[in-house]
Length: 261
Length: 161
Image (tube, rainbow over all chains, first blue to last red; front, side):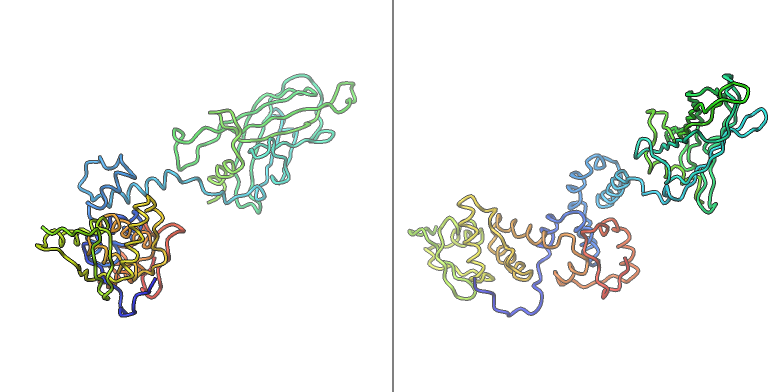
């Protein structure tokens, strides 16, 4: 095809009529960009005539709003709202490697320590994987051996989370409850967690701190009775709306509210 | 009323080339059609100003494709921006509805997600905003500038995002 003779060194100027016709074919973003070109373009490219069909296509529910606001503005509002709706929560700034769990179980009667533990969280086993629940098993049991009495005793259970370097502390559980000392038995402790400050309890879902302590027998005591120790511990954050442990990221995001300033 | 006995209409472009086109094609050019209908006697040659022979070549290409039901295959990709604008003007002058729509869409596609500077340059428009005015307009339309697919602004405009 024969190329045009290079007589035009300047840009061809299109008539206003043609410009407006082109504007009808522009997508919303390009149209908005076009309205920044010059004053006259600002006026023409924001016209209701151009924006009404765009608004009705993208946000039909907004086009029925009674307002004296331009269609162009309504579209911008709708666009922003749609974006916020789609927004997923940002990645947590805390990671498991930043945290240490400290659990202590003491007799409420005489403050005798039954078990005292602390672990870096990234050394713990996620159980099940991907979920904010961690299990620790102890060979031959952990903590102080207690007499196998078969009776229940009132204990104080605390579960704290500490940010490495002591940059923050949050108490997930501070609970007084009953515990039986039977080899092979499992105790279950649960305590409501506060809702993060930004949303009230009504809006945010309910989570609890969840701890299970399993005892295991470990030989005989001097007086012939059996001894038990803490055999395993699991801690986690449980959502009581659907009885599932929250995911790792959700758990971290939750703790962030309280651990980071 | 003029009525040519032959089925071909002669069109003479600005650069002097004569094209013999089918009556049906001439009919798609409303400007030409009006000239034919207004003439008292037979018209042998219709001059079409603002239309060059390379425009006519493309017009005939488009016509052939659309008659064969393949109008979607028509492409103006090979034209640069100025050539496309000139072609648009020619087709606008001839008042050819379908092809004009195709070309307007093509121009719109080329402008898609381009920067303000690009659009200004393309249409040869001068920025008559003060820096403050521009900043205010930019802020209002900020949503349109967000996204990976948008071309970044050139620094020479000295406008901040």
